[in-house]
Image (cartoon, rainbow, N blue to C red):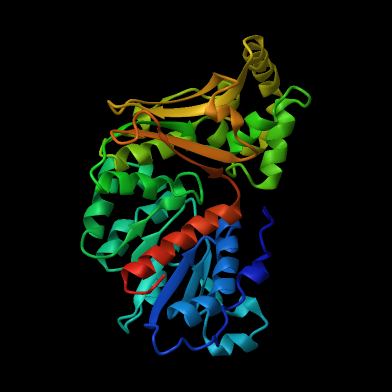
Length: 384
């Protein structure tokens, strides 16, 4: 898996302007796109969009038109304008970021379908989803802030989306794995969720799979951070907060009005390190080593393995904790950044349904976002 993000200049190259014309039998459809957050995931997504654009236009009649990219302080509009092909001074085409102006520009005035992709980690951006959806803009995001944030905001987003615009968030849970879609399909076909559990963090899966005592736990955390497996602040992973958010998203998808504060979470971050600035925390990572060594010794003493497990039961109770599992357990055989989610439903009761695969890294997360984009295009009449 390639986890290297492209350079900023590479991310901002305009999408190709000339693509093969589709055959007469393929229905043509254009989709205007605005990307918020050209970071690791956003950059990987731009590369995937750029590579797929000619094929989608030829085989599916779908023309993806990148109308803008917005970062935290500046934005770049008219990314597909022909005159930009001759512009070599990128500083001349950036302007101060304004999300209202950005959304209005993406929406345009020509009646073309428009979609905003939020790859930022900004709660201020998530606050705007309901308004964008109500205005007819489709929204796709890998950010967990909206789907696991205040319940009132989540309900407002769904009410706004009921008017026709689509809100998709598959990549909020286990990156590119079809976890949310699988649960939605089960429920939409009349099944009933009894419980769900799994390893929802690719970061913690990688740490548990790699941690055998030969290297300090802190060294593995630093390596995971360098590889881009962790959140920008690794405490979001180690504290269990990131996993708790994913559990809240699945609970709400299943109809339980769960809030983040209701999830019972065991943090791997000592209280003394929780309030530090991110740089200071990384400098004091060694304080994690002794507690984790003790947990590893506990697991080995009973012939088990350490795994970070999240669980949602039939009553909507949720928990996230580091557990010792038997060596024969299904979760004991994951590899690298594998996530595994087990759904036990009325239909899949004796033999639960498992979804498993890589759950960390910008490439797979971007692929999950891209898949949501294509599902929206399909709902608009494009043969995906």
